[in-house]
Image 1 (tube, one colour):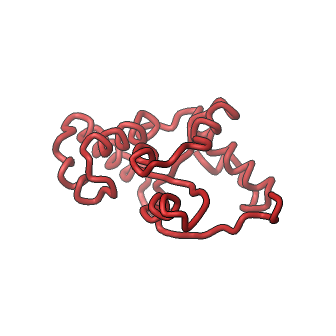
Image 2 (cartoon, rainbow, N blue to C red):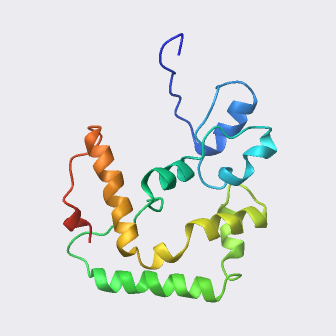
Length: 156
């Protein structure tokens, strides 16, 4: 950049698109439902980081995790999560009102797209590709000095 590095402005994700649209900031990194709604603000996509990750690594996007203290019954917790996911997939309309009440974008179509994209088979079972994605992300972050190195065996 001719004027030096960009200034990073931290703000709640639901304020990013209006700030870009209104000229308060030059660009923004959007997450959640905004991935589907940025065009309605008159904004253009520069890079889809999820697509970039998948093409660069050949792995799924490591989006998040459910964590629990070591002393808890992890098998029981995993079973509850699997049961919850299965119930949600078997009864997709049961949580619609709750999801829409807590969504930043109120369109039922956007909420469904968001859920379908992020609640998938990796939510039920990471499998080898899911663990490889997490390991790749942590390895890259450690190489940049952002996190300490992690033994991949500890992830399973």
